[in-house]
Image (cartoon, rainbow, N blue to C red):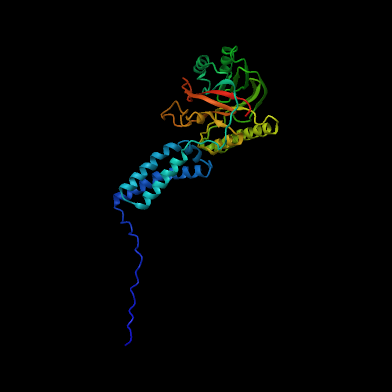
Length: 347
């Protein structure tokens, strides 16, 4: 008797259940969530790609940590209306934004020698010299050995050099009105004065501290206004070139890398690729980052917005950091940065 063969039914794999159509009011919520995700996604992508791109990205990068707020709100809206794909996208953007906001530190092994000298540094933008009196009170109270002052005109320069002729008798400056003038005041003798070319004054010099030659440089590139973004990049690139050249010159000598201090109003935060490039090129550390205060805002101290970004920095090489404080200056839209440092000997 012949065996009758019957075919087994073909079992199809289960298909994913499609998301139900959106109700009209949920459609509006989904669009709102998508719009909230757009800026955080763009900025987090540029941060991950290590680029400042072009306007408005440099301006938006200044808000990077705060962009977790719209990303988190978008996630909440997507979850409320039950859209799986949108919720997943919101999770990715929120995680990427939060990851991008982690404080930056160059990947370098730091080994210091014995402390040679304690050095207090103040970096202050006095906003068209309007904060000169407040800065004078800070210098009188804190007694720093180095003071980097941006937006310091002739009147500001004369006031500071006369008031602190005994404490800070040495200086290097670029004269100019408005935001152009800058001055570096020092209790140590200065030599090898120089400037980094730029729209605003960026004087520098070499100081001898405890028998060690220390490179000092004041910086003040233009702000990244939408119509000046390319100029902002070029001036930060000039600072990067200075940092790289100084490091290369020092490496070529028998003494290795020379200690360095680069301070002032960078008009850039750690979230800008151009600022991180300066750190990497010069083997520099941000004193605020070493003191775990790299998210303390220094600008703007005036106007309708609360301070939201740190653009004033003290960068160091071969210095350890005791303390960093941020001081309000009446008349200025910037906080001053006070860094209490130790100059270290050879490794």
